[in-house]
Image 1: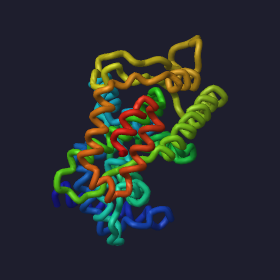
Image 2: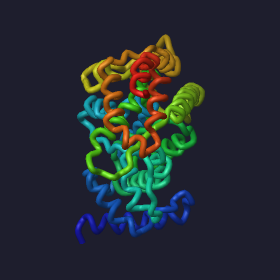
Image 3: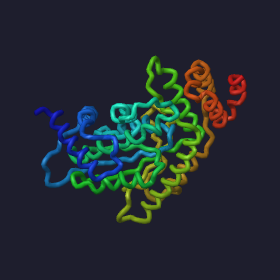
Image 4: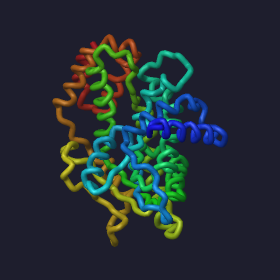
Length: 334
């Protein structure tokens, strides 16, 4: 029996075991074991070894609002830790497997893509996490999220720290970005996808401004919660350390030192929450060429955006995000 067949059998057993105890697993079943095994092979994981002492490993939860640049910042974490191999678990990376898992044949609009795919992407994330914890001890893991749900993060951290096969330390990394900058980035990200979609009929992920605003509020309150937990429960704290980074001046420059808070550094003048709040409240400096380019993309893809019922709403949200776009907005919306 080859390694893939062996892994597939283990995946089947884990899916069946989890379905019997976890009511949230509604879509996945043993027939998806081969798909999950194929995904796992992309991680190049080391198989379990018989050890008397569980190996040490690091679990990093990278939290930031949508549009802050988490995916790019993951590369900086890896660049700063070149002696370690990290597996990255991000629910967004599993969304495009939705049609292979769901039995519902439905047309999904860009506006509804995230909402519709949330359950299946969560199940894939959860099962892959369980397989890593059970079958691949000593694996360093980076989990990314917007920190909208405190209880979800607590469940994740506890699952790693209570794992009997690996001695995990857990760190919270947060990325602080001016609110207007990250809000602009959510439109930039979506419209770049629209511009380069080609002939694909696959739905694209769109995040509206209301969802973004909710994310911001929940992000700040969740940081406050975990920072209080760190200071008030020194013997049972969830995260062993908390770090705050600002976004790079050049977002693709991994060599820049952007660390602005670290619980490992004593006698700091500000707490994590204060450092994040201060940066988020700063005005964003967005190049006029970036703004002009987005308006060009909107016009070039007017028909597509109208087909998604997003043309007017994107223009309005952009206007509310960046008042300096008003003149351009008036011209384009005539």
